[in-house]
Length: 300
Image 1 (tube, rainbow, N blue to C red):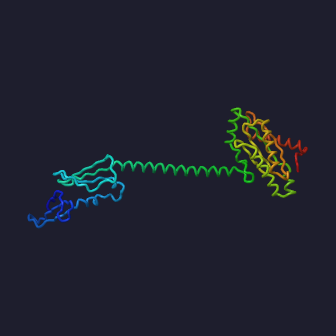
Image 2: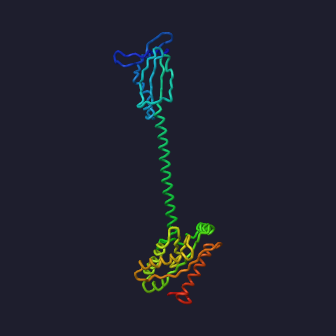
Image 3: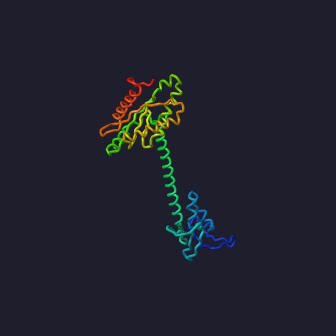
C-alpha cells in the first residue's frame, strides 16, 4: 500500500454530514492496482475518544479538530459546563489536521471536593468508630469496677491511679476524709427474715450512700455489708453532714426500720496513704460499734 491521502473537511453531498475522506492506493510492484477510500464522519470522532472508564472526565472535555490549511474548526464534543481551562493539549494527527483537547477547571474542583468529602467522611467514620470503642471500653471498665447489687464502686476502684489522685489533692491542701461503714445486725436479718431481706438491707444502705454523696466522691462496697466513702474536699467535721444525709434517706426508704449502721471517719493527713486511711477509719468504726454494743462490738 502507498501513502494515505487525506482530504480537507467537507460536507458529504449524500449524507449532508461533515466528513474526511482517506484514500489509500494499493500497488503491486510499481503498478497501482486499486484504491481504498474511507469516509470518517466528524461526529463519530466523539465515540472514538469517549473515556468510558471515566465518565466524569468526559463530561468536562472539549474536543475539536482544526484544518491546518483553512483554519476551520470542527467541534465534536463540548463540556457539560464551561468555566476556565487550566489544561489544553493539541497534536497534529495528519499534516492537514490538528486535534485539540481541553479539560475544564470544574472537573478539578469536583475532584478536589470529592477528595475533601472522602477525607471528611472517612475521618467522621473513624472518629465515630473510635468513640464507640472508647465508650465500650469505658462501659466495660465501669462494669468491672461496679458492684452489681448496689451500683456503687467495688474494691477494684482502689487503684494506684486513685492513690495518685488523692496524694495530689493532699499536696494541694485539699481535705480528703475516709469513712468506713458497716451494717448493724445483718446476721440477725438473714437468720430471722431470710437472705432476700438481708440483700435488700444491703441495697437500702448502698442506695442511701449513693444518694448522699457527690459525683466527685467515691462510694465503695468492699464486700458483704462493709462499705467505704472517700469524700473529696470534706473535712472531718463536714463529713458528719454526709452521715446525717444517709440516716435521713434511710428513714424514707426503709419502712421496716431494719437497716442500721456504724461508721468511723478519718481525715487524711500529709504522708497518709489510702491503705493507711482505710485502716484508721476501720479502727474508728470498731470503736463506734464497741461504744454502741459493748466489748465485742456485735449487734447480732
